Each structure stands twice: as structure tokens, then as C-alpha cells.
Image (cartoon, rainbow, N blue to C red; front, side, top):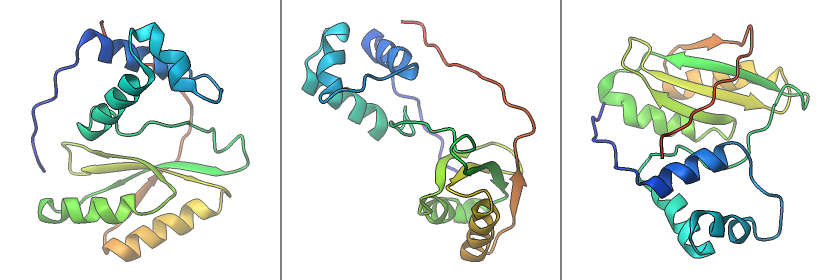
Length: 155
């Protein structure tokens, strides 16, 4: 697994992450509506978000849907992936459209990811397909209780 130095975030980066973490306007040009609050132009705000994604400060930028409330399925899964295969397996796992997040962990189970599906029964099918595609066992860790945690960065 690759070790990297985290990129430095300036006060505007932190404000963007904090403010957009809790909501996003539904409008024709949401970035144009948000940009002045950060002292930026629409283009500069979009460029900063693209940089945060490219630098892997953000793993994704987009809506989060509560799959279960929409009639779908959701689970957390983990795998023990040999270090030499980690990047290749991550590419396979991330290739599934149902995989919402994928995280490396310093643990025997070193790859953790979230699977969200349109139908609850599809969760097991996706996990089985990932096992077949990677030839590795996938541990299914369905949610027993839900907690809300929010990340806030000091500006």
C-alpha cells in the first residue's frame, strides 16, 4: 500500500469542505450561487473541487442517497487483499457501479467499501460478483444501527 503525504489545505479549502458537507443548492448553476460565499468565482470553486478530488482529499463529490429509504440495499464490506494485488483489486471493486466508497485500512482486512443497490437482494449478488472477479473472500458487514458523524475542519 502506498504511503503519501496529505496535501495542505488552506482556509478556503476547509471552508468549502465544511460548508458543502452539509448541503448543496438545487439550482441551475449551484457553483455560481455558492462561489461568492467563498470569495471565489464559479470557475475557481469548480477548479478547487477538482483539485481536492485529484489530490484524493475528497474521495467523491456528489449526492448521498439513503438507499434503504428508497427501497434499495446497503452494506459495508471488507476484504483481505494481498499488498501486491491491492491496486488491481481496488480497480476491479471500484468498477462496480454499486460501490459508493472504497477505503484502504491498516488492518488484516485492508480494503473496506460500501455497496448500495436498487434492490436489497442485489447486495449479495454484487458481493458474490466481486468475489468471483477478484478470487478473494468478501466479508459482508450489514448495518445494525445507524449513527450520524460529521466531519468539520478548523478553518
